[in-house]
Figure (cartoon, helix red, strand yellow):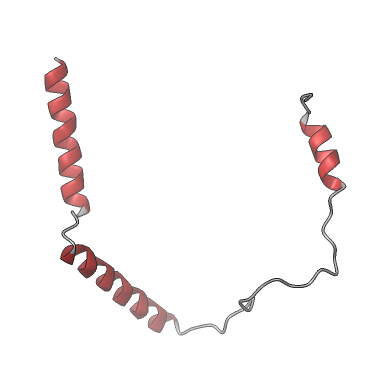
Length: 82
């Protein structure tokens, strides 16, 4: 297969245009009704709290614990290498 330049690829791509009268394949409406901003923020806070609680219940580490473990591993690796 021969190598193509960017211009050749762009020229070839122009031959594959989309049909303007194609059916709309969206299953979700394009524009949703605007939500109340405060209600949306409250809902996001609730999702975040639920997510954090689920992570706590599963015993997953926090970002502080992960950072401390990475720092410790890095320090041990440098000491071992020296």
